[in-house]
Image 1 (cartoon, rainbow, N blue to C red):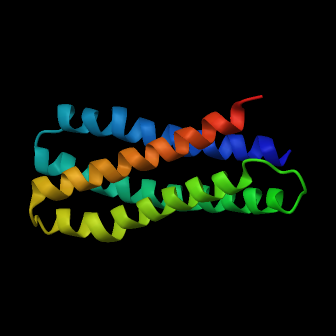
Image 2: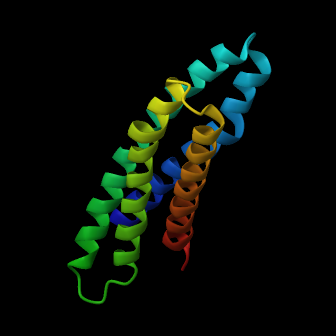
Length: 135
């Protein structure tokens, strides 16, 4: 049961990351009247996504830590590492990158840094999901 819950949480986490960056934000910039309006809304959505990432990461950590207590549990330590890294990246985006973007401080640089951190988080969660669904 816990394995299924972990897969569901990972699917939610990876799917929300993918949907936001791959579909929602591009649609905002394509359909809203000004880039400033689209950017403000995208920033709020990314902030909510960071919260989703923290909650999902904590749930994955809880299930992974319980698995490490069982003898012969494989892959739990990797799951702990990837989930922790995903959460750290979400926190870096929220409290390190986002304030600089909002302050319009070297905007191109901080957008690039945020995009790279987001892509690494997406990759970590994708690897976790891939590993969790293999037989």
